[in-house]
Image 1 (tube, helix red, strand yellow):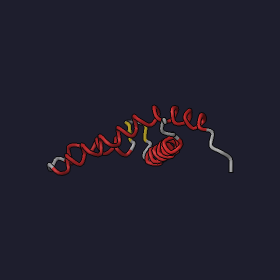
Image 2 (cartoon, rainbow, N blue to C red):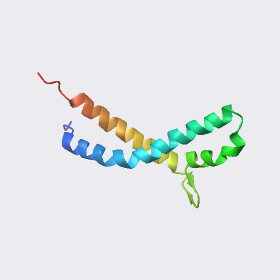
Image 3 (cartoon, rainbow, N blue to C red):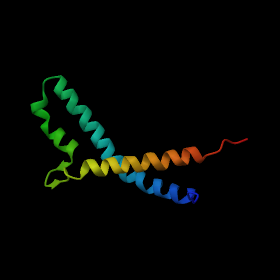
Amino acid sequence: MNRININYLRQLHYKIAPLMIFPLLLTVITGTLFQIAVVTGNADNFIWLLELHRGKFGRINLEMIYPFLNGFGLLMLGITGTIMWLRTRPDN
């Protein structure tokens, strides 16, 4: 089995992270705020949050692929980050 090129892995992680931070934060924030609206009984007034949460951005409707892009991006960040973390050696 070939060794994983740690420099390539770092570059991949470095490129994916900035692309994924906005959609992941948007998903977390809109999901949390909509849940607060549900708990307070105001869900009907905040359906637009649920639409953003699902990937509907006005005329741009990404509802069919948005969850998969979010999931794939998060999975890639988790894998690359975990591998880099495991490969680090403590200073002696």
